[in-house]
Length: 267
Image 1 (spheres, helix red, strand yellow):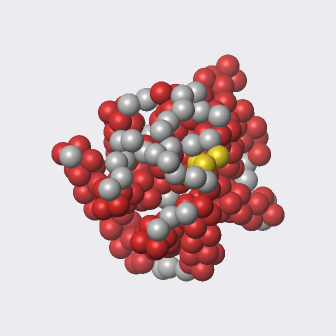
Image 2 (cartoon, rainbow, N blue to C red):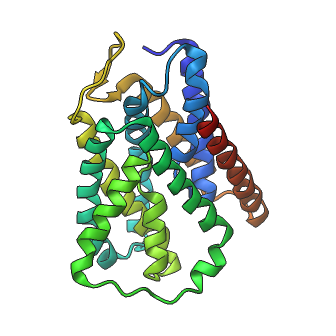
């Protein structure tokens, strides 16, 4: 079981990711993973040694909230089903492959992929109005599977649930604004659940460091704490926040992710 200090750390991370995700619709792992990168050394734990279980536990912990958000959107008919059908199979396959590749990857590969996804997220926040003005990008049927695979693999290699690239894909395909979020949530659910399969049966085992409670690469006690906290604060913050709140939170997130990238690359 996690120590009391680790319990509160996971609780606070869940609170931060749940609130931020609910208000400005960002990928929670972009907050959770840098936070754990910063604080694991305080507990005499190395992120490099625990990279796979850290990422696997975070992605597994956020699945219930993603599923809740997607089902809510489905009930409101705010999901582009055709768009989901076109790309979800490839994204799911990419999720499994990405999770397997992550177990074989080095910290350097993760840093590069995480930095790329973070940069795309920042650009998406800063240039969101310009993205909406871009003409629809035509994608042929034969390209659906390769694009889905690319989204799933790159997302998992970066420790991401797929929200960043899925949201970008919806923007390029001009998915209706009312259906944009629900469709992205659907992609995230497929990618996350598929990735969970890959994490339960990783391509390469890792040193458990004499810790109990693992299912494959997922640390179940930590996952449950993080999952509960994240879902509770997501639910608590739903439908809250005016435009000013969202702008301030978006700027704060951009500053946080910038500082995180600096810290990740200089240590």
